[in-house]
Length: 162
Length: 276
Image 1 (cartoon, chains in turn purple, blue):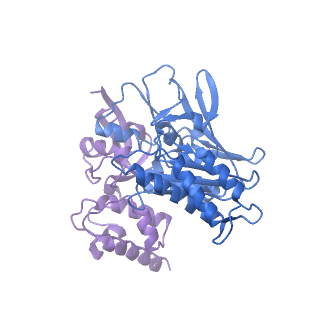
Image 2: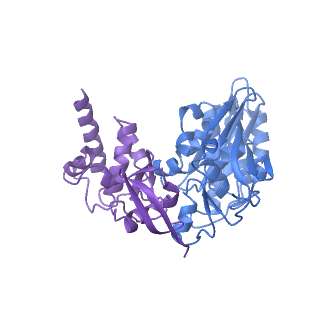
Image 3: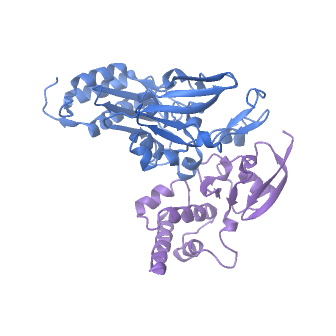
C-alpha cells in the first residue's frame, strides 16, 4: 500500500480535507469512504454504468475514473450538492412523479446526468436523451419512465420561462 | 519531472489508467503526474498556411466533437462521438488513446488514415514520428522512458471522410471492428485504416490503390462491382483474432462491410456500371 496522501478537495462548495487516502484512490472511494458522501454509487468501477457520476469543474464524469488527488483545486458537485434533502430539484421531483425510480441504485448518477443534459440541451428529443444517457445503466425501469421524467422537466422549464 | 522520476505514472483522462488501478492490476509505484490540466496540452489550432490541424494530447473527445473540429477533420469528430458516454468523452483524451494504443482505440484509425504525426517531448528535446511508426503493437508504442505525447498533427483533406464501428450496442462499446475511410480529391487517392482487426491499426494499401483507380473522380462515382471488390480487399488486409468479444471470421467480414458502407456514403454507386 502506498503512503497516505493528505490533500483538500472542494466538494459541494465546501473545503474537505482528505487525510487517509492512498495515492491512486478514486474520487468515488474518497467521496464515499473518506468523506461520507455516499450518494454516488460504486458498481462497475470502469466507467460503464454511470452510477458514480459527479460534476468536476462543470464536466459530468465518472468519479470512479477520476484519481481523487488529481482533482485538487477543482469544483466537485455530487448529488448531495444538487438540492437540500427537504427540497428536491425539479429533476429529482420529476423522477418521483414519473415513477422513474425503482431500486434507486442508478438514480443519483442519472440525476447528475439529466441535470447536465438539460443544461446543455434544454429541449431534447427522445433520441438525444437516449444518446446522452447511454452511459447510465438502469436494470429496472427499461428507461421509458426516465425519458418521461426528462421530458416533464423540459416542458416545465419552458413553461416557467415563458 | 518525468526525467527525474522514471517510475512516474502519467495520468491524462484516467479512463484507461483508473480502470487498471481500480481492478488492482496496477498501483502507482512512484509519483503520478496528472497532465490533463496543462493548458498547452488542452488546446488545438488550425494552421491554414500548412493546411494542418494540431491537437494537444489532452484535448478530450467532447472537445473533438465540436463543430469547429468537425468542419476540418469530420472523421475525428465522428469517431469521438462513438467513444463511451458523455462521462467518458468529457474525460478521455486523444493523447490517452495514443498512449494506451489499444487496437480498438476509436481515434486511432482516423489518425492512421490521415497519416498523422505524433510529437513527443522529453528533457532531451522533441521528436515527431508518423502515427503508423508510433503504434508498434497491442498496447505498445514507440514512446521511450521520460517521453510525453504533446500533440498530434493532421492534414486538412479536401474530400469525404468518415468513421464507423461495430459493437454489441449503439453506445458504450469497445469496437469489434472499425474503419476510417478518407477520400483525398486533390491527390485522387482513397485511404483506409482498420481498428480491432489486428495487433494495431492497419492500413490497406491494396484496397486503397484499387479503389483509387476505379473511382471516376470527376463525378465521384464508382461501379457496384468495384465497390464489392474494395470490401473483399479490405477484409483480406485484416488480421483479426478470435477473443471474448468476437470471432476472427466475423471481424474479417464486418470490417469489409464497414469500409464498403463508408465508401458508399462518399460516392455515387452505379449498380449496373461496368468495372473501370
